[in-house]
Image (cartoon, rainbow, N blue to C red):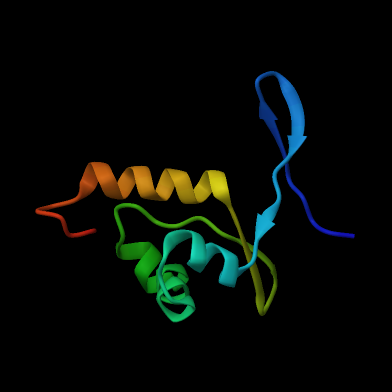
Length: 85
């Protein structure tokens, strides 16, 4: 059975499927190692726009599309001359 967090969309409870690191990297059009770097503690701490992820256990992380959208929106609003902060 998969892990699906519940979220409220338009007043109804719906499941938001979780993305694997490979799926999230493909969605962002970056490599999996680049995605891992975005998730490291030091990167999260120093970033104005951290990428939120769910840690299921020590070696398993998952991502929500809604969290990726928030990350991208923050990057778009915080970009300096086309460079992501």
